[in-house]
Image (cartoon, rainbow, N blue to C red; front, side, top):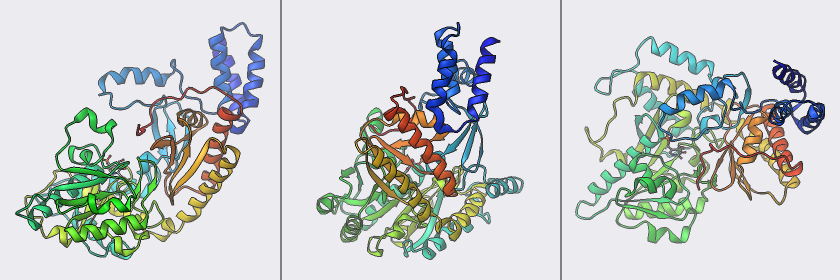
Length: 484
Ligand SMILES: Cc1ncc(COP(=O)(O)O)c(C=O)c1O
């Protein structure tokens, strides 16, 4: 009882203060508790709770109790930090104990329209009462509509002009899986007498977890547990123009690349590199695949990231997913006739993919993500982030290195493990993720406001100050998906 009283009194009084007063609050709380007869661990937890607006749920919390009940039933593919989220609204998430978090992750570049967008919710509600699924054995009015919309938007927004058709599926991995299979089929048909089945991809890429997309993801952390990979995959160095001719040969049926590598560390492909790949693919008759699952759909400020590159490097296939469903699982593989002419009925398929529910939702989302309201706002928001990054690099020149990325897919390179910063930020009410090696990744909802960017970056600054300037100890909580 006494504990609850202390805890509540300090926490309530101090949580109303501004987040960047954390160290002052910590000091005064610690002073107030100094003469108390409470056990040390209790005093520590009170001081800690009082010093932060949203500290992680402790091991005694309702959250931890629930997690411990449920975890034994889940295959342990992820390690997660302590909060348990149950509600989302715009750029904010709320946990089951009603802590509020500003979300700079948007579910790994998925919730471009923010959490629980009204229009998305309405599309789901309406369509779920009309027709959700019939299988691809029958026509419905929405799969074709979404396909047409993707092609028309690609043309209208400066994407690859040769795009003609779309295959709708359920996820990014599945969209890449289709692209890889299509490239293999093209290779077999354009060169029936010769083995033309090699797929080329690049170090630092992430194309998914299914065996085909994983085989194109040359990261030992992901591949080693499931080796051997599918035969015929070759890897090159990203942006190495000189290596292109030896890497892509007459045996190559497809080249898959992210114009901006997301998981690999927000690495932006140079126009020279993509032009060299396009030229070489055309020379050897290989399919050029752009994986825009993370960087596409408005994130760079262009509807497709490749629309920001010269037309000479435009691809034969674009794959997309993530923001296409804003949380609803859906993906798509957009192809031109060079590819589609080789795909026949029965070559590929899916049960759920392209069902009326997913297509209705994606169709609505596309109309928003391609709107000037979203696309025209990205450069200003990107500049706002970059201004904050510049300020932080001036304050911590030894710790913060490069800034990479475009639009709202941005990375801030640290010279050390960023996990304590991520934990300190979360405990102050901000979610960020990592990528590459020691990179902080910023992929917020595209609807984020400049006020929200300022508020979030103030938290990042305070997290860095607390650890690097004030020497506060934060043991980083594991649970970030890092490429190590
Ligand atoms: C560029 C890229 N490709 C493919 C994938 C795999 O998508 P999914 O997780 O939906 O299968 C991801 C996921 O992070 C990605 O970022």
